[in-house]
Length: 90
Image 1 (cartoon, rainbow, N blue to C red):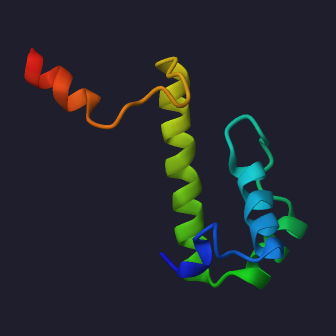
Image 2: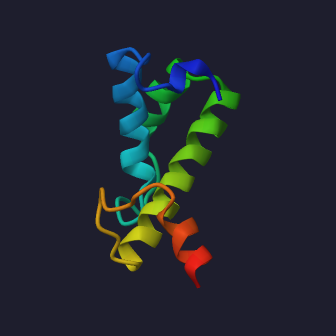
């Protein structure tokens, strides 16, 4: 993915545009799709390829979030390596 998507390196205007798109792609956020003004701002900031990558990143993040909601995962509760230890013990 393009380095522009690294949140530590993104200019505030680009970051705001990214979140504007995400807000309208999110489940339950809208049944009408992305408004024209939001899409126009996104297309000014991102190429077609970058928009495809951004859209797939939003979809992946939303998917993981839905799984975490369903599993009632506690944010910050994961300890690296804990699943490997649990599987090794069983």
